[in-house]
Image (cartoon, rainbow, N blue to C red; front, side):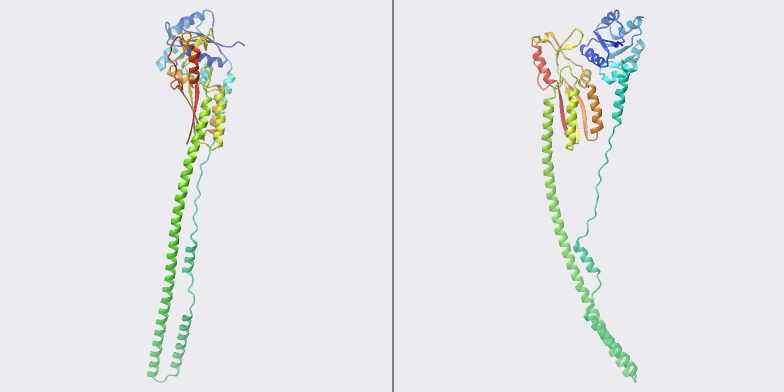
Length: 439
C-alpha cells in the first residue's frame, strides 16, 4: 500500500519545514512549493492526497490559488487545508465557501494536526491514533489522592503538689485528746445533775445546784469552741502555706518552661535557616549540572527523548529526599545560518562558506512558541506518566524563551563572516535551562 502524499504551499521556508516534519512523522510523504503559481504547475503532473495552503504569499494568494484548484475538474476533489496565521469566523467562512475542508494555525501542535487528519480521514494508520488517544486518556485517569495530617491534643496531668493539697484539705479531721476530756467532763456533770434531781428536797437547793450545773456547762462549751477555733486556724494557716509554696513552685516551673521554649525556638530557627542554605546550594548544584548538559542540536526538538530521561532521573532523586516544589524547564533557540537543500529541507552550510551563502533563522512570535515547545512522542508519554506519579508533590512547567536570551552574544552579521563560526555561537545558545524552586 503506497503512502499518502501531501503538498505544502507556503512562501516561508521555516513554516514549510515545520509542517513537513509533522506530516512526515505521521507517515505522509511531502512535496514543497513556495507560491500559488508553482502549486498550479505542480498539479499539472501530480495529484497529491491533500494540500496545505498558506494565505498570504507574493503574487497569487491562498484564496486565488484555492479558487483555481477547485475550478479545475482534475483537481477539484483534492482536500485543501488552509495553513495560515489568519483567524476569525469571517475568514473561516470565506475559506470554507471557496472549498477549504479545514483551517489550521501556524502555531500548530502535532496532536492538533493528528486530529485534523483524522477528522478528514487522511491518516495512513488510524489504529495508531486510537492507541495514542487511549494511552493519554488512561494516564489522565491515574490520580493519586493523599489525605491531610491531623494533630492529637492531650490534657496534661495536674501537678502532684496540688493533688496532695486537695487531699489534705478534704481529709476528715483527726480526733484530739482535749475534746475527749471535755466530753468526759460533760458526762460527769450530767450524772451529778441527775443525782441532785433525785435526792434534792428543797426548792432552793435544787435551784442552786441547777445554776452551778448550767454555769459549768457554759464554761465547758466556750472552752470547746475556743479549742475548735484554734485548730481550724492552724489548719487554715497550714493550707495557706502549702498554697503559697505550690504557687511559687508553679511560677518557677512556668518561667523555666518559657526559657526552655524560647531556647528551643531559637535552635529550631537556626537549624531551619542552616537547612535552607544547604538546600539552596544543593538545588543550585543540580541546576548547574543539568544546564551544562542541556544543549540540543539545531534540527532536534527542544523537549526530546534525552531530556525525558534526564527529567525522569531528576524527579526520582527529588522525590527520594522529600522535595515539594516546582521544576521550570525552559528552551532557548539559537539563530542558525541554514541552507535549503534540493528537497526543500534546511541544512548546515558546508565548511568554508560565508553568511552570504546561507539564511539566518528569523522566527515570528507565533513560530517561536510552536518550535520552542515541540515535543517528541517519547517526551509526551513521559509527561503523562510524570503527572500521574509526581503530580501532588512536584509541579513541572514547560516554556520557551525563543532566541531572546542568548548566553553568548552574536557577532555582527557581516556577509563575509564564516558561516561555521556563526553557527558555533548559535549552538551554544540552543539549550535547555532548568530551575528548581522548593515551596
